[in-house]
Image 1 (spheres, helix red, strand yellow):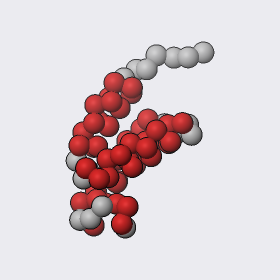
Image 2 (spheres, helix red, strand yellow; image 1 turned 30 degrees about the horizontal axis):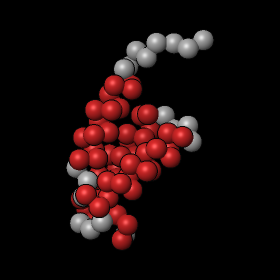
Image 3 (cartoon, rainbow, N blue to C red; image 1 turned 120 degrees about the vertical axis):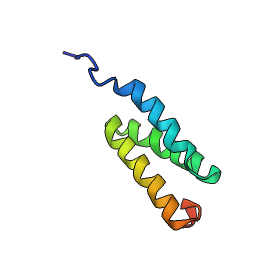
Image 4 (cartoon, helix red, strand yellow; image 1 turned 30 degrees about the vertical axis):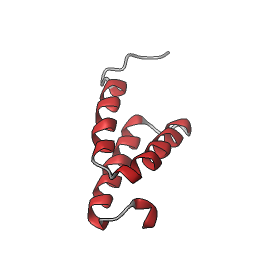
Length: 70
């Protein structure tokens, strides 16, 4: 039985995904989008993917260079 999405996860995911992606450097955005698609395809929950996005934004700010070069 498939239940209702009482947390409105899909709606919130779209909103928060855009917010997190916009905080990244332009050169990192494509790579992170690809990572998000891959994680969702592997079955990770929306909430777990948002947590990863949050961490990537934080790491990006701390290292002050593109994530690819880390």
